[in-house]
Image (cartoon, rainbow, N blue to C red; front, side, top):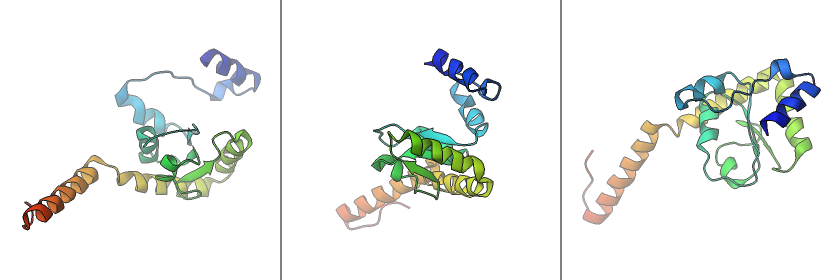
Length: 146
């Protein structure tokens, strides 16, 4: 849909402010995320979204579809705004709200970053190690290795 979106941007008079960068190397993803002001994930069905966590870790307030997987990461009004996945007017209103509320955007960005920290490799590994220690202790009656 790139050509259609580029045409639409031109028709709306915003082409000079929109970049369609296409696929970028994996190591550049954080750079491009930080270049944005907000992140959108408005699909009707998602599992746990690594892309959403990456955006949150980059400090972006998020506009996400109000589905269970997204609600696991984004509480409406805290890390971003939840909207119906097919609610074009609600999605548009959420972006307008973020655009007009610098302080709210900053607060949501900080909350998003803080939430994403819970999914860092170190924290996830720590949780798995704790889980394995508990399983060993239950099975053997002795505490697992520290």
